[in-house]
Image (cartoon, rainbow over all chains, first blue to last red; front, top):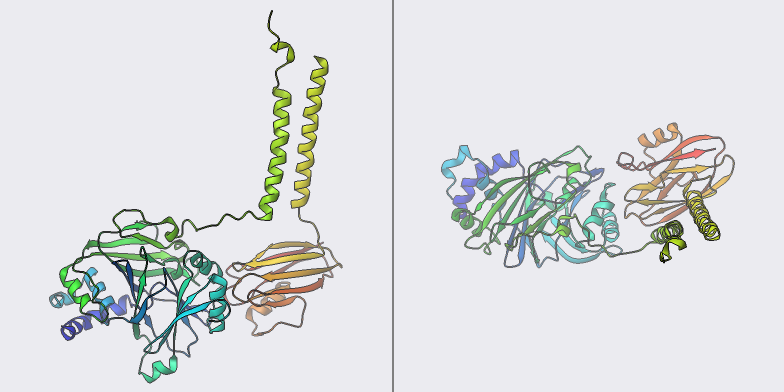
Length: 346
Length: 141
């Protein structure tokens, strides 16, 4: 089955890689002079039995480990392993017109805590736990050069989930493996979480406001999910596919490496991110429970804030109180009825 | 009755005086004036404040606090100085009081005496930072 599917996909995959080039999904790619421009990205965020399966591919860009990527995660992963070889390509095929292949379509620095380190092929992956400052300092100490918007973006994520995945290619190991520039390494991250969540804002990391961002996000859920923000097409996200997953797709996905968890039935959604960087100020909150109530906090619209009254706020409060008191005196003074009028007529 | 009325008018005048006093205090506190000690905070790759007012010939101590987890620069100078740094390759600035490097999470203190009136800029010239808005203005009177 694998060989048949791989052969069937090889032509299609080549075509789609050239066009959409599954590279790095939902991570900010950071190079020596800031972020590296990406053609497109593809991700699968699947949710089943309280576990998010996050499958993405990191593309080797050459160089000497001078760049890597940082991806915010909704929780602490229970495992990180090499992803299947064709999962992302198979999803692209499922939701894109495949005219030419239609007949064959039937087949730790300061602060940050390093909580997991995994080597997948030539890719060094570290899961970090920490606030924005901790993770930023860790990244700098490990050779990442963060772009100027990184402090705000890292803070945006750390306030909701202080878990980040840093990935760096070992250039020597990649060369030893014969890995060419452009070769992708699929990675499968398993994250137990109450609800899936896909980082979108991170895609704009290091980009200018008018830079174009393109990404394909595939979602596989037990039932039709609800989204926040809804992919309206005018907000930088477009709903390209929403339907029950076909049995052939589920069978094919299940036969790929590490994908035996794929359920017997599922709902497939494809959301295309097609936006200017300035539009991506949010994440994609998903409610796969059927309640239809995706979280404003997970979407990044409401930050989980603790109420802190700063000194400036205290000053304003004191001034406002004095003004209110003065106003009250004025009202009492001028609004007080004259004594004579209170006197009964007789 | 006239006594009551006079008392009410008196209370009203006192209230108005209180309002005027509070407004004056607030305005005086918020109006920027020339300073000899200025704190500039760097947060989310922006300078706060982004405009400062100083006196000619008076030493001014700048305390620059970098709250960000990334390094920044604070280069004060005219257009020629800024242009030199835009295209320059000097990695370390540690000799001039007007050119400070502030590592992530750290604070630098420098004292500058501005010799003539005018306007200078302060900018971070690390890649992409100026375009992101990391620039401010010193007005010297």
